[in-house]
Image (cartoon, rainbow, N blue to C red; front, side, top):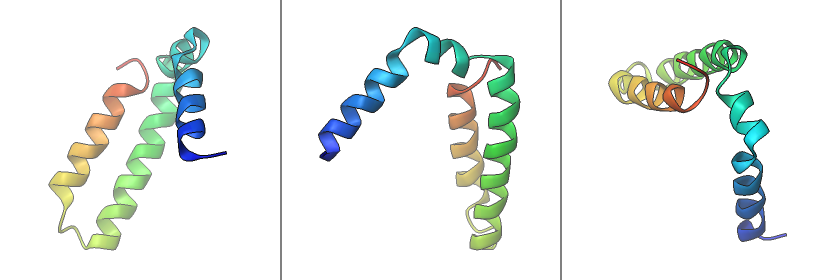
Length: 69
């Protein structure tokens, strides 16, 4: 299975209405907030806070795509 096959399967999966509904739920928002916050904290720790603004921007952009807020 090549990269194109994996990409197509991921697009099909994410395009499914049930998956879209799940990703835009209140429960997904809570889980994503915890996960994205943890990843952002780790990235800031690893980089010594040098890229705090960029990391926060990436976290915010990802957060807009997942959950209901």
